[in-house]
Image (cartoon, rainbow, N blue to C red; front, top):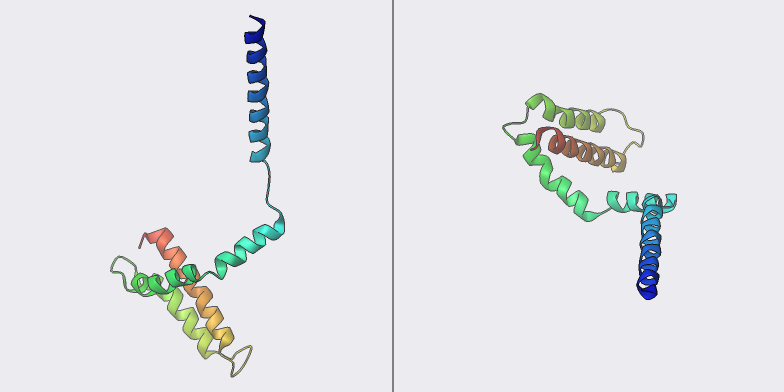
Length: 115
């Protein structure tokens, strides 16, 4: 009988220790540099940008998507390409702004209109 109580006590202590470890792991946070690396890895991934390039034209030309909403991408991009530039004769900033607009527009269209 004493051996059974001892095993029961050991199992109960093990269970409480396991539960405590799970509770402590729930509150662990990543260091800030790991979160930044994850953010940059997401922004620079070819998979993400491939998705954006594949979805931008179907989002703009989708029949269920209002034309006024698709102008939220086209008009600011055209205006930025035409207006006087921060870096004249260097189209890198124009392309960067267009890519950011594409990313924002596709995410918004897929989230809001389920395109």
